[in-house]
Length: 85
Image (cartoon, rainbow, N blue to C red; front, side, top):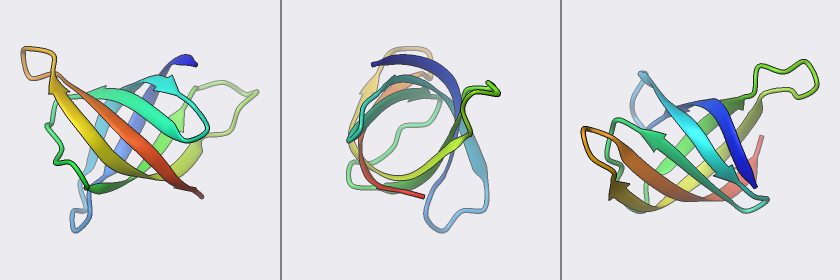
C-alpha cells in the first residue's frame, strides 16, 4: 500500500534519531527514504506518524533488506517488519 508519512528510526547502539519518509507499507514489509545508507541486516526501531487523529503512531522493529541510492544523498530502504510494538 502506498503511504506517505513521516518516519523516525534509531540504529542499534546509537542514541540519535534519524528521519525519513515512508513510501510503501504492508503487513510484513516497508519501503522508506532517508539521507543515510543503511547496511543490509541492520535492525532498526521505527516509528511512523501519519499526523492523523484516526491513526496512532506505529512502532516496529525492521530488518534492512536492501539499500538503493536514488541520488543526492537520498536512499531507498526496503525492510522486513519483524515485530510490532
